[in-house]
Length: 112
Ligand SMILES: [Zn+2]
Image (cartoon, rainbow, N blue to C red):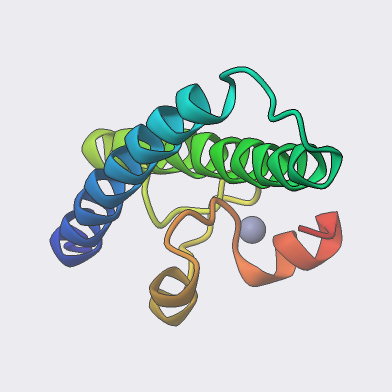
C-alpha cells in the first residue's frame, strides 16, 4: 500500500499556484483586450503579448485538468497503477512526472 500523501500535497500546492497565475493571466488579458494602440509598432507588441498570454493560459488549463485528474486517481486509490497494464508505476517516475498514468514500458510503447 503506497502512501501518496506527499505527492498529493505537492499537487495541491501546484494547483493553488496555477489557479493564482491563471487569475493573473485573465486580469492581464482583460487589460490587453482593450482598444488597440494607434501606433503600429505598439499594436504588434500588444498582439504578441496577447498570444503569449493565450498560450500561457492554455498550458495552465491543461496542467490544471491533469492535476485534477491525478488528485481524483489518488483519492480513488488508482494512483500509481499503470492505466494500461495494471502494474505499479515506479516511485521515481511519479516523483518526476506526478501526473503520469502509465508505467515506463507502456509510456514508451505508446510514445507518451
Ligand atoms: Zn504499464
